[in-house]
Image (cartoon, rainbow, N blue to C red; front, side, top):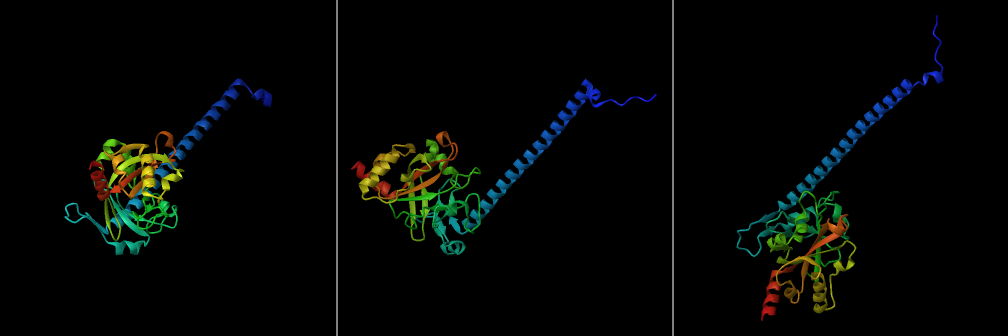
Length: 283
């Protein structure tokens, strides 16, 4: 005798519903596994791209550095010899070279028509994650002509560019970096860091370059020194007797600046001005 086919209502037995739930769980589990693999692939691709971008960044900077000779045993006034003609042939926007002994900071400095271009472009004109070090476009070229000159550099996670400038918020690290060289085509400046302070990225007063008088300039520096996170001995006396500073600016990522909206600025002065200021203050 033929068995009567089950109606739709009769088919919805507890065992049938359980089977549908099991199938649904299996499908969900498979989808989660697939989604996990997709996320891993995307994360891996992003990491690979970042590492490649860093590689490209480092390669350009190494090529630029091949036109510079650093000889710490030299008896010359500067340990750095720069082939300016070769560097200008690569990018005529070059205005200087920054070298910090004991660090990996040994980079060309450029100046564009704004402060945006060299944030993400290298000396070859290619978009890059770390750009190049650059002098503020409102500064008088090649730097250290205005009362304050500012050089900007990225704080990259692979330890290059100005990452080691950001580390100077630790007093022990700050104390180790007692010499900074800034070279232009016509002059070599030996500088020493005076202090480091943090500020918001939208602090327009940080970009003050000229002042109506030296007293106004010294008052400005004193206000910044009051916000210092690290400083050299006698910084308060030194700023009373100097006429120029070179400020190195980079991003900071801590405390209230966790989203990268903060800036760490290391204020440096020519060593001859520092010595003169200290001799006057001790007289």
